[in-house]
Image 1 (cartoon, protein in one colour):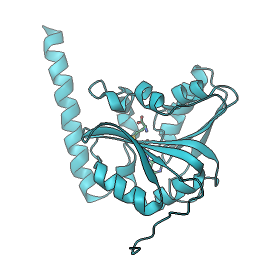
Image 2 (cartoon, rainbow, N blue to C red):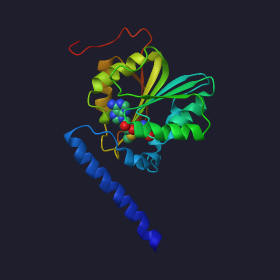
Image 3 (tube, protein in one colour):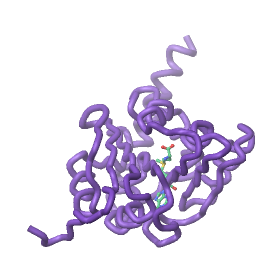
Image 4 (tube, protein in one colour):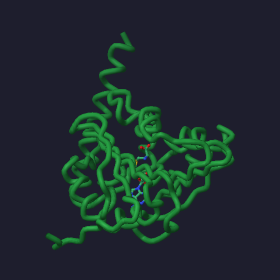
Length: 222
Ligand SMILES: C[S@@+](CC[C@H](N)C(=O)[O-])C[C@H]1O[C@@H](n2cnc3c(N)ncnc32)[C@H](O)[C@@H]1O
């Protein structure tokens, strides 16, 4: 009896929190609060395209690659990424909130990952090295960033030519970004969309930094 009431109550509580957070975020971009990190760590049981294992699988990672987990939160993807690239590879986990990074650090340590480093910074503010990463993952982060054009410009520059940015969005996220909005931003930043998984309300899109980068379009170009 308790269980049959407990599950709907938990779902109702999650929906209520999501609505309140979405309304609050309409006024200004708010990062997911640290006290809500457990919600992120659920690894979304409802949406396949938001699960860490699925996202990692799409990336065609190999041993020795360098990956940026941009907006890593509590490290839901950090550990699986680090395990996939192996001891010769490297994962950099970046987040604007120290409380999230602490949780990600603890997870990486308890999984025995020695190939992860952490950066406390905001995407788009210039903390990232140029031409450095083979892959960048941006999972339910984009809508929390006030200056998305600056963020995409930095992510473009930190990828190696031929590297891939995977953007993941899911409608349950209060900051959900539509596929069209992401593709528009990607195009104006010089990316080329190269793969799409899922549906319009829950998806992974891969954006490539073209080799040579000569087809960079700027606002106003024909
Ligand atoms: C909804 S959580 C997603 C966490 C993780 N990517 C995942 O899917 O498990 C969004 C995270 O993005 C971080 N974030 C928001 N704005 C950011 C910014 N401008 N730069 C870096 N991280 C940011 C938040 O602190 C939060 O940890």
